[in-house]
Image 1 (tube, rainbow, N blue to C red):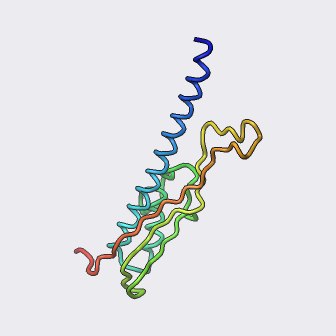
Image 2: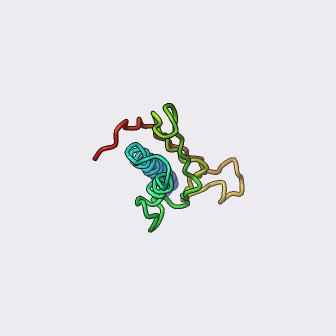
Image 3: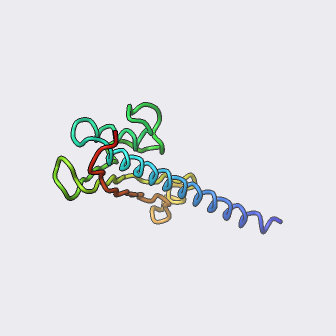
Amino acid sequence: MAIVLPVLLVLFGATAEFGRFFYTYQTLTKATRVGARYLTTAPTGGTADGKAQNLVVYGNTAGTGDPVVYGLSSANVRIERDGGSSSMPERVTVVIEGYTYQPLFDLGALTGNKSLSLRVDVSPSTTMRVFSTLPS
């Protein structure tokens, strides 16, 4: 039992950390999807970009409450429009950039060796086609 316990604890920690990373990545991916979906139906210009950034970061257009993921801010959200004209683009892309996943069990911080760090840059993006006519 004494020989197996440390191995089981390491496996448990690795599994928990992988699950947390996967959950964080999926949450960020869903946030970009919601922001892109909002921008496909919102009129271009005005406050649509700011509202979409708030929707990605906070889950609402008002920008109130806690971020959907710890450490995420509006500065991490980039919005791109491709094709068509500036008033009616063909595609909209929402990208989260510069977000670093913060692990619970960071071996690099515990040992002082940065090569063992489990911090990972996460950069999900979503591209959607813009509706040519806005729904009523």
